[in-house]
Image 1 (cartoon, rainbow over the protein chains, first blue to last red):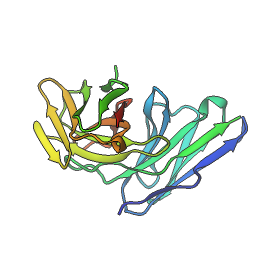
Image 2 (image 1 turned 45 degrees about the vertical axis):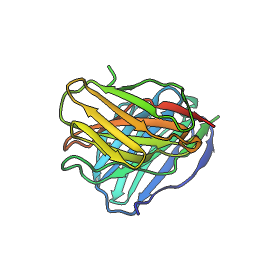
Image 3 (image 1 turned 180 degrees about the vertical axis):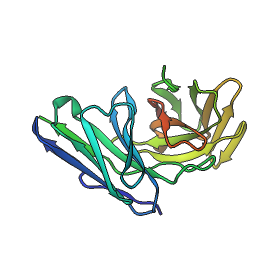
Image 4 (image 1 turned 30 degrees about the vertical axis):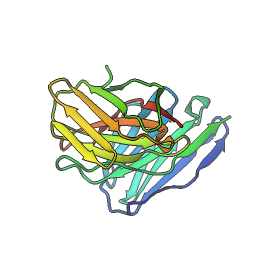
Length: 115
Length: 111
């Protein structure tokens, strides 16, 4: 059974703080993703990584950075948290997509509130 | 232009009816499509995927793909109140990492 875990379910931070969100998967997946989900906007890709130390920007990378030092761990960093980064953050992983399937598996999510 | 579009709903159906959820996409490249179910406050979970034209059945769920018309649908037969959730449609080009998610359709199944 694929398992994707995230370090916190709920997090409250102050404006200007540096925030780290951690994600770990136990299925040796090459790909890992960070999304944020907001009402009416759906899932928006922030960054993804297809290998250790490799990363690519998604659709909304501004204000975020990522780190992938080990295959199983992918971190999202909010350099200076702002109130518009209050959101649900979802981590996902998948095998490298040779072919037709290879779905994404999601972690439980982190509900971040920036005050 | 969004790559994958869904009607946000809510779609309301009575218990026991067939629920029909639809999704259109803009990229004509070869793609796989995935249907996820997301309960309120929870993360998305995969229901099924489809990549060939036609129907694919799994229990009460049937996914349909029409590449000529660029739409994907999910039919839920014998809908149950426990099916009430938001359903996300996602597409992925073959051999590419990036998934494109629709904004989701909220389904309410009324007892």
